[in-house]
Length: 276
Image 1 (cartoon, rainbow, N blue to C red):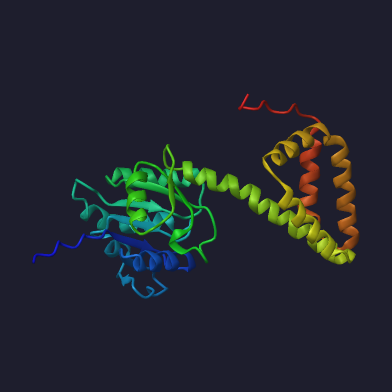
Image 2 (cartoon, one colour):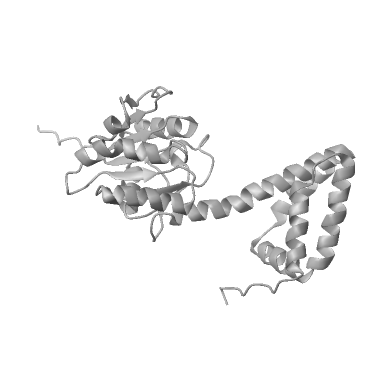
């Protein structure tokens, strides 16, 4: 009896084996993909083949996933080029995917370097914390190599959404989301620190949690509309809040920034809604 030939699993190279890189590399390997990793400092986790360099990790790979840092992203790509070019078979060239958090402009520059070398580029944005989710963390991908990158990662069980548009499209969405999430987190921390100093942290913590639970799609519209409509009164309210935080010994960084925004709203016409 003749058994069928085993399917050839794609090779994924992971550059950068910090917390995110190690978890994603190990998860893809556990899911059955062949994974090679390179990091000049961190050893490859169990199940991941150790490479000698960026270029060595890239040779023969179907997908290269850069998870270094934004500051090291340019060097990682340039040092990978010998391996990327050597792996070009024409039919399915290796895709270089940068998954570092960076601006759209930075992703465009990387895409141009890759394009000059004839390498398809994908801009990947990781949209949630990697610990706890591993390689199944929600991701967005855009750029000329997006479809191929998505197909390879999907074979390892990754959760990835392809966006139409060039490199930088995914990065833009991630950073716009960061303005809200990280800004909200900073506001919550500032408020809780002040409440602790005022002796009512438990009350405010419960109040914030209740407001988040009760929010829905209309909450965003109310925040936006109310901020323009009541900008003058709210700017005075935030000035008073900043004074209170000063009395409590808490630097009113987010509070003062909110006050400045509201003061600008009193002098500006609300921008037109592009939704009509």
